[in-house]
Image 1 (cartoon, rainbow, N blue to C red):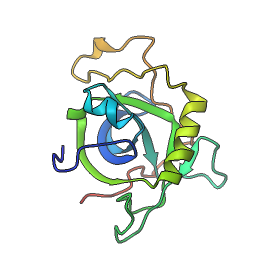
Image 2 (image 1 turned 90 degrees about the vertical axis):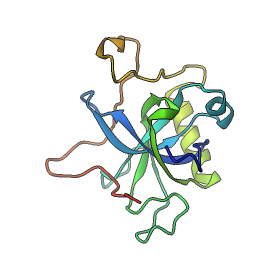
Image 3 (image 1 turned 60 degrees about the vertical axis):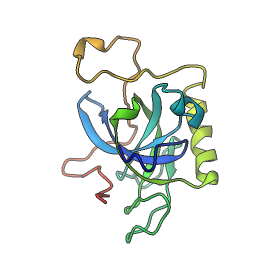
Image 4 (image 1 turned 135 degrees about the vertical axis):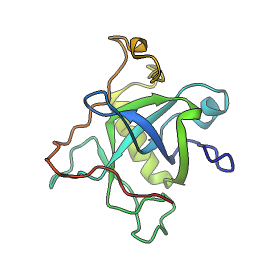
Length: 160
């Protein structure tokens, strides 16, 4: 984790989360946990970011600011969206890099979508990726809503 910039509500970070088949992949995600919860050491709730955008954007997708040269505060370099229904729980140690932060208006829209899908009172536990038996039937799975076409990439390609 980049200790100089700890994650906070609205941070865009790289972390490993499960895909639709339960396989862990490093990808950009948006932190939707409160900064106070993160500081308190609670699991961090995140929403996956995808570059697989259908022609008609589903209601659970929120377009994110980006700039090819990396000038957007989000740190994102490709057209992409946060998928409110694709949520996961991680620990602060799982954060590989903090790349940016989303503007307040974008976060309001995303948090509204997240609240509609998963009420705030329900927590997503951080998965223990070292112990496969740690998964329980009550643990929410990552479920992207966009259809995956063969040969399409999903990473937003930010590496710096």
